[in-house]
Length: 162
Image 1 (cartoon, one colour):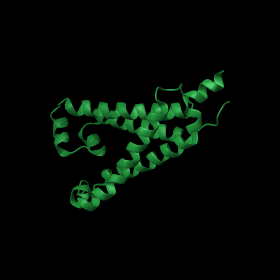
Image 2 (tube, rainbow, N blue to C red):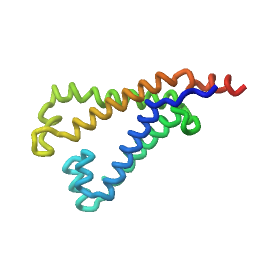
Image 3 (cartoon, rainbow, N blue to C red):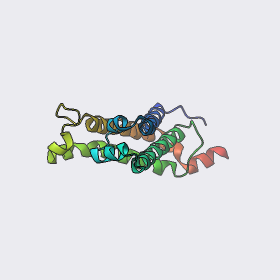
Image 4 (cartoon, rainbow, N blue to C red):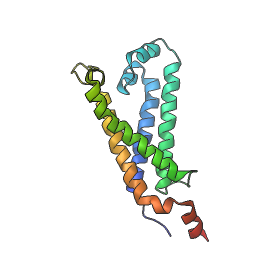
C-alpha cells in the first residue's frame, strides 16, 4: 500500500540539507560566513589564523544536519528506509523543539548573553533566528513523523510485503 507523500518531512529534510550546505559554505566563505552561522569571536579568530578546529566543528555540524535530512527523506518515502527510522525521527524532533524552546528561559535567565550585541543593534539576530528556525523545523518534523507513524513501523512494512 503506497502512502501519500509527507510534505512536512520533505520540507524538514530540505531545511536540514540547506542548513548543512550553509555550514559547508562557511568553510569556503571565511570569517564573515562563520559569523553568519553564529560562531563566537574565539572561533572567528581561529578561522582567521587558519586553524583546522573550526573546519572540523562545521563539518561535524553539517554531517549531523545531512543525517537529519536523510531521516526526513526516508520517513517521507523518498529514499529507502534507514535503520531505527522511528527512533531517529523522534530524537531529531525532540532535539530541534527543545533547542528552540530552551531559548526562551535562557533569554529570561541570561538576557545579556542571549541578546547581546553581535550585529550592533543590541540583539543577537542569528541566535534568535536559529532558535526560531529550530522550533519551526522541529514542529514540522513532529507533524510529519506523527502523520507517517503507522507506516514507519518495521512490522507494518513486513506485513505489507507479504
